[in-house]
Length: 290
Image 1 (cartoon, rainbow, N blue to C red):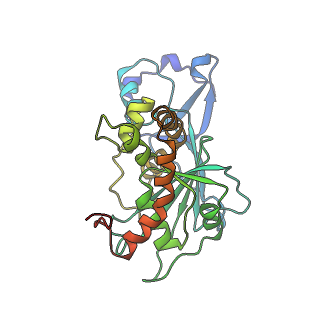
Image 2 (cartoon, rainbow, N blue to C red):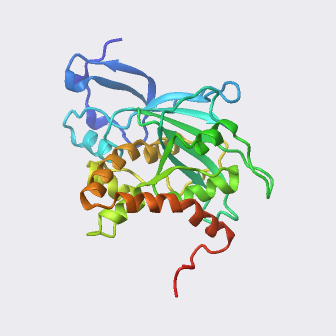
Image 3 (spheres, rainbow, N blue to C red):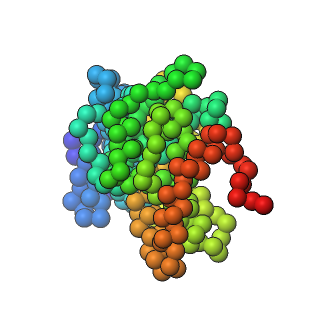
């Protein structure tokens, strides 16, 4: 039906418990181009055949503000760019998916010890407002999961993969998928080469300082090995790749201005070797040190 947004008492909405439903409602005001219908219960996920999306739905990363303080605080807890559509896949990317020549990538694991903590999720985005989440199943000790479509994309020499702290993600992808990821761009390395006036180079810091976006890290330490991920986990995972293209653009301009672009490229090119040293037993030792 028709919803009169001007009559809604925003103060009565419990922003901590709502979930976005499938439907989007257009309003005539240009600044409120898209509004969302909310419900107090999660939307059911639709299970389909393997290698097809298990769920494809829109999660609100931003909504036009009405000016109410409760709505403003809810928006401030999440990213503030355009709406992000999440497509969830089990085991591998679907056949025929083309994400272009630059893809943002991130991973979620059970912990930070890759000898013990398995890879659970791989997130990818072409920077077009769509995030693909690939759930990786558990495998027997010493074996690797086969995801041919995902592996082909990660190893494609014609596709640049953007990471934040690529060193860890590349190690996880090699350890559990057996793929050498290249070429890569790391926003954390780029930040350390350009933002020498600060020691804050986390993704949350970069999004706030360079894009004016507040990214929540509340779901960072959650159970990523669960059979069914929560909407909050999916939204968090998607936000980790939603801004990497924009961050790269900002950081590239800074690298050019400082004359450090070639140095950054050399660092990115060395990352696969650094990963092999990590996995071979030299994770902390600097072998170049006297």
